[in-house]
Picture (spheres, rainbow, N blue to C red):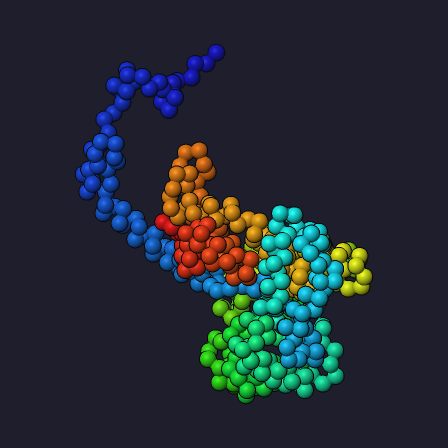
Length: 469
């Protein structure tokens, strides 16, 4: 048997062996000699390494700051009502609110019936119902999109574009006087920038803006919806079109904003095997405000049978997950689609539609989609019921966690026996409460009582950065 020589790397490290080890060369004296329990630091070396890393990462730092600025400031509506432009007239938002109230009076007149219809916890039914009734009077529609695309059935798009713009201008003038008249967010959906509809899309938008601006300033919160997008090139083209329209109509640069409807498979997985939606998000700068999922066009394009098409179908979940990752940190907001099961007909049909819509809205909220489409006045009732319940149900726990975080009270961050809250979690808690405050599910006195914060303090915590540190 051959005897292997001892491996120096495996030699024992006892006292005898250590005594035979060669003495280490003395190191140069560091600037910071340290002390008991403290390692010495060579400040010059540290500064040199930091400067080298800064130079190497300067471009990456700039790209990260530009491409991922964090959440877009301000309120996000909880829904968008799509209305054919040729059906738009004075008092439309208030009319939808009254129709929703009549549906509730007919089919869910009391707290118990309301809670059962909307599938709410019994303990919250009365509270949520009172908030919904008030909302349907004061602000029945948060976001209105005048539709010149799939829902439009008019015969003269030029005339309808001018009429809708004139009506919107008139509504805006009366808004401060008449509660519930003008939604805080408005806009239009034109046709796509595909070759077949491109000219019509540009013409309608140009005519609409010309008529609107001849009568009133551009309303705050005005957004254009670009449907059936198939490439990032179309998003870039839309951004350039907005620049041209601003120049033509005397608008300040950057004032026109738009959102993209995600309803084609090409955006989720392009021909090159990449998620084209990620390029879309970065193709228009700050002009792009949102990605709106188109449930039925997208599902149909994937061959899903009509009776199976739903916001809860796995293909819809996959598409929304890709959208969510692509938009994260960019300031581009997300909106889910709609339910085409409308609360119409007899009692059973209405209650079934309300229950389904309420479940779908709740499902979207739980998955981080805080906005969706509504197509019928009575859907306002289930939209607000599910949304208000979502925020009311989580209010006590979220407020308590945030209060502990802010106060650093016993049981807060770093206290043994309780999971410490991370700054990112504090931002999420603050963002959740801010959304509830924006839509009316939570009141400012409640917020102050439960968290010790006012709106400004909440917004500070919800903003990007090291929350509370």
